[in-house]
Image (cartoon, rainbow, N blue to C red):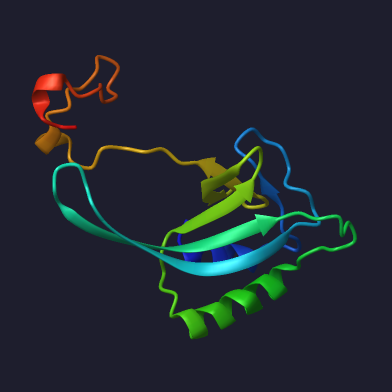
Length: 148
């Protein structure tokens, strides 16, 4: 979900509800403790230089059970972040702590926001000669492929 899509969705709800990938509700008293711009500059395993930029939210729950973040307050925080951090209409990545801090994508079903599991992938499959597995997923590199 891009930032513009999230802002639009916020105008369609009276309250913010998030669910984890297993369907568990994020406690209603969560805070969005950070809105950030994350830039990643890296080289993939095939030697290609790449850059990514995303908007990052951090969800946090505390012992303040009476707290409830209203959609308009969230819009206000994002607007301030857009001004000060020059946020673009990037994909959103959400950090939320379960057993450890997880990074999630975000979707919206018209009523609730869903944290979606993210997965790693090889960005240079052609350079690495990663064979396709029979089920359509990528198999491991062979020792002769010079991938690793």
